[in-house]
Image 1 (cartoon, helix red, strand yellow):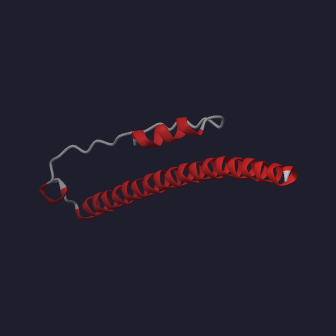
Image 2 (cartoon, helix red, strand yellow):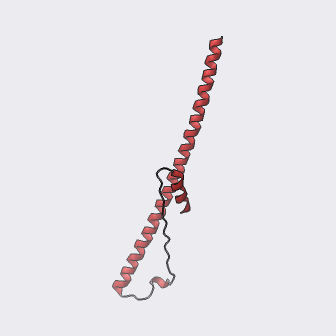
Image 3 (tube, one colour):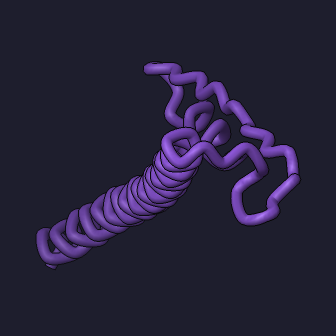
Length: 103
């Protein structure tokens, strides 16, 4: 009977240990999913900005070729571009994630 109680205690310890490991691995997976989502969103926004710049350059080159000297489509707004510096620290993933969150 004592052997059965020891076996039950050992099984209980194993279940507890594996439960803790499972919780930590699920938390890690959630962090990786969140980081992946942030990176995908950043890349999408970067591509959008690049596409917009390309469109503006094409419009400007067409205006130069056709000799148009007035602003395109009556747009007199001054365009400002934000520059973002991403600090990547190989030792700390949270710092790079915070930099991406600032974007």
